[in-house]
Structures are given as C-alpha cells and as structure tokens.
Length: 243
Image (cartoon, rainbow, N blue to C red; front, top):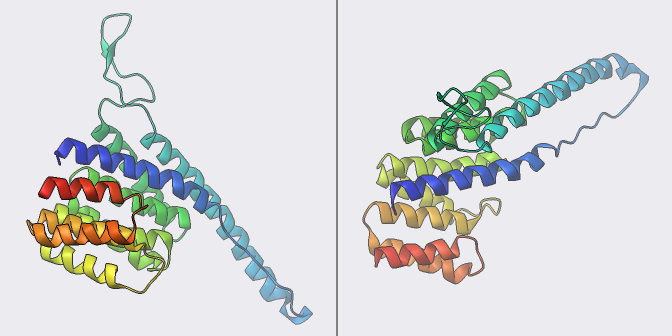
C-alpha cells in the first residue's frame, strides 16, 4: 500500500474516532447520596469537588472540541488575493500534514491542561494518532502508552491505545514487539477489545514483517470469524496484495 494512501486512511481513521468519541465524552455519571446529618460537612466537601471536577471536564471538552474542529478543517492550496499575493484562506490548511501538526499542538495542550479528565485522556489519544500519521512512531508509542497508563485497559481510549501502540511499533519497524503485542491482544478474553480489530492489527504486523503465510492465515481467520466486519474488505485486499 502506498505511503500516501496509508496517510489518507490514517486521516480517515482519526476523523472517525474523533466523531465517535465526541458522543462518548458526554456520557458522564455523577451521584451524591445523603446518608446522615453527621456527614453534612463531608458531603459539602464532596459536592465542592464534584462541582470543580464537572467544571474542569466541561472546560476540557470545549478545548477538545476546538482541537477536533482543526482536524475537520478543509485542506486547500493557497490562492492569490486581490493584490496577487498568495494567501491561505482562514480556517484552511495547505496540506493534511500541516493540519495534523496544528491539531497536534491543540491536542497536546488539552492533555497537559486537563490530564485527569476524560477529554484530556481523549486528547492524549488523538495526539498519539496524529503523531503516528505524521510519521513519528516513537513519540506516538509513548503517548499511546500514557493513555493506557492513565485510563486503564477497560476504558475506551485505553483499549484503542493498545491497538494504536501496535501500529506505532509496526511503523517503527519493531515487528517482533508488534506481533507479540497483537498476538496477546487477539488471544485475550477481554470482550471489550474487538477481536476483529486485533486480528487486523496482527495481520498487518505479519505483512509488514514479510511473514506472508502468517499474515494470510490471520486475515483468513478474520474473514471467517467476522465476515460482516468493517475490516473484512481490507483483509481481502491485503490478501490479494501479499499473494
């Protein structure tokens, strides 16, 4: 697969995850129960923390939304203005990479300012994805691991970051590590990690490492187990490419 096509697919994947996550960020549950009058002081303190945390989360979501808007901005070449001078139209970027670089700055800022919020964790994940798309796998792998460390493996972004880490290792040509991690994920009993996605990452790792037979077997398994999966068509394309 050509590098330009991989970049386009990565861009589409990043945009898809961003859109999906926007709805998930709104799903917050808060509860405070009144036990006895003796707990009033404790409850007031807890209420103050809850109010602070909710305000912080809201501010983080606003900042994250602004960063997402950059990813969704148009990519247009500079055009001549009325004076014949080449200028970039406001709200647009000359290349996909330039747009990703701008979004990366915003995502990193949100992650740094609101590290413990769900929006901050999401921003850290998106920053890792942008780094991967920009061809900086070592930095991407570090950010993905930070997401796992902060969010845990049961969190949506924690699970996605594990898969992102595999891709970053493949991009860095650390094939043995990527294959080992993808194998562990595909064999895990955790139903929260989509098996079709882990098989896809494992197949990609095998293919990148030049292990065609193992790659084909993995893609065949994906298609057999998940014929309706969104990854099934890509698996068939990969099989045709490596055959």
